[in-house]
Length: 79
Image 1: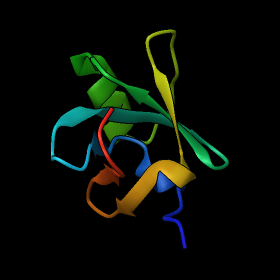
Image 2: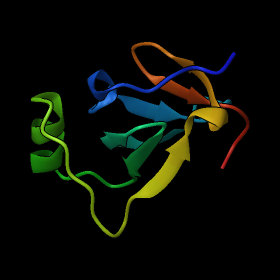
Image 3: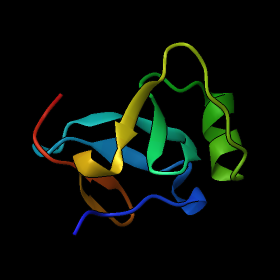
Image 4: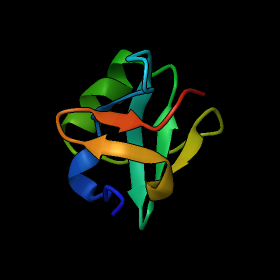
């Protein structure tokens, strides 16, 4: 069973299987999350308030790529 994404995941840190930080979740849309690899201070604040946003530098992570979702989101393998 795959881990699932919800709107509560906005602002969480995304890491690969080795623990390398890859960015923060900027937006969740269904079974995909937009991950901002270089969030600004303002983007961190908006995300912590649950305000979603997506821009051209974000990359997509789908539920099939997830190992676990808790305080942070852990991907299977590395990117």
